[in-house]
Length: 249
Figure 1 (cartoon, rainbow, N blue to C red):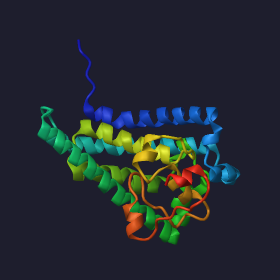
Figure 2: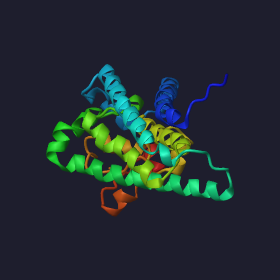
Figure 3: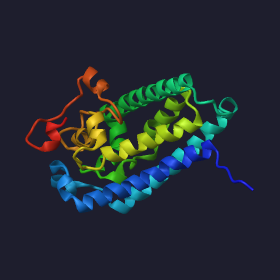
Figure 4: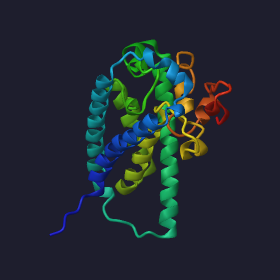
């Protein structure tokens, strides 16, 4: 008797598992290499306005909401995604295009929604300010948001990316796992030498730490992959200094 788990089920739960595994890895790295901590984060840790247990509870609530929406999304699209295509050069090329397009869609949705959350005083005061209680961000606080923001910004951006790109549930496992790891890494408050994300993406932990700082909340809205929307609309900001993490931006 064989036991098979569907791609849809894996697509729901693997990104959640990846979130906490990568959080554990970063927590271990931070404990062993405290010198990797970004200086601005070290100086601001006492300014955080929320307890760690509250953050964990908020993240678990958001992940429950994401899992629910993902299950609904997979159910609605199940009739068009049955079967597995043979891995040919063309299907692999098509998958690569879909993956990259989904990255662009995700970034576009999150930039404009994130910026709206900052520029609308009501939305910021009653919704987005909850996330910015973490003046000094840390890894497992990546998904600490107001439930409305969790739905409109994080969950919906993923759903729209999935639907617009036409990717399969199997590909979504890798896409959402990458997006999850990237979000956690951006909030870790560390600059880890030779980290591949820092070499590939200009949108990285230092870039997002600037946004969480008291002087950077009106800049660096882009997340989680690229920075082109910030550059186009003049919200790109990376202070220059002597710290190693700033030299690498």
